[in-house]
Image 1 (cartoon, rainbow over the protein chains, first blue to last red):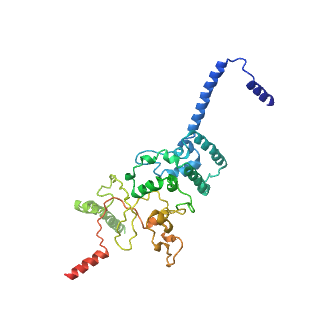
Image 2: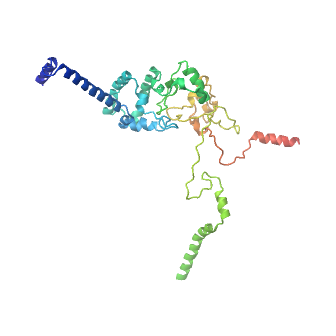
Image 3: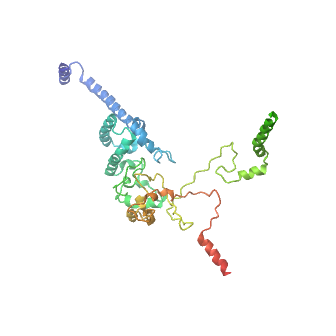
Amino acid sequence: MKNLLKIGWQTVRKPSGYYSLGALVIGGFIAGIIFWGGFNTALEVTNTEAFCISCHEMEDNVYEEMKTTIHFSNRSGVRATCPDCHVPHAWTDKIARKMQASKEVWGMLFGTIDTREKFLAHRRGLAENEWRRLKANDSLECRNCHNFDYMDFTEQSERASYQHSTALADGEKTCIDCHKGIAHQLPNMKGVEGW
Amino acid sequence: MKKLNLAVIASLLVVAVSPIMYSLNANAADKETINSVATLRDATPIDVQKEPNAIPKVVNKDIKQGRNYPMQPPVIPHTTRSYEVNKNNNKCMSCHSRHRTEKSQAPMVSVTHYMNRDGNFLAEVSPRRYFCNQCHVTQLDAEPLVENTFTDMHSLMKEKSKANKH
């Protein structure tokens, strides 16, 4: 084993004896495309609803709850899938979130929320994670679809247009401050601002 | 003895079959009156699936509607889709509770909701009044299925005093 590592290390260190510089550069370039493309494709696969609900934790709890909400079925037929709200679109943020998500793999392996009861017991903490994230990025994932500039206040109900044209317009509040629990059921909201 | 048995069976048969025969013989006019009773199915024959009515929209105007009698729980003038009222939360109270009304400008739930059945006031909404939708409901933009001839006390009294004057 040690010898094998040694040989490998020496091969990497020594200048190439057989291959031309051109072959190495072009080969490296092509390999780079393949690896990078493969990486991104794999990343995209983890960014689908089907992947998210391949764990029963997600399918039986949050996905089931989402089915009754307007983000699942509505008049215009636009559906928000899990990653639309839970994974940032920008690349760096996405990678950061994916790295955070490795903890969720840990949770899956060790069954942290593998029953409904356990899930409900953890719900407040899980919800708070998402509220914190959306609060910190000014509800970016909401705004990927819901653009404030394109809102027609006259189409909104009176209460909605009042709140949106005041608190939301001057940046005092962000989407998640009022719109909690719109896609999943709420935890116990005792002590949460506005409840 | 055997003859008697036969007679009993025959008479029983007549008793059992006669209502069926009667209903078969019922004339068309009778059937019409039976079918004219207001139901969700209207006069659709029993073996036909009725075209469902369009689902009416919830009234969402935020304008208080009148009460038909003094004790009527006020109706909700806005949509309440996916408002959670359960063991964990009461979404209604995040606007209508005493300490939220200043911010929300929504009407506060009346003090009777804080009373238990012995008339003592509690710090929180009384458990028997917790589930808002037991009494307060949204309204649909739809015609009533059956005509309602209810007249409230005030109109009755007004009419009476008018009649007395004449």
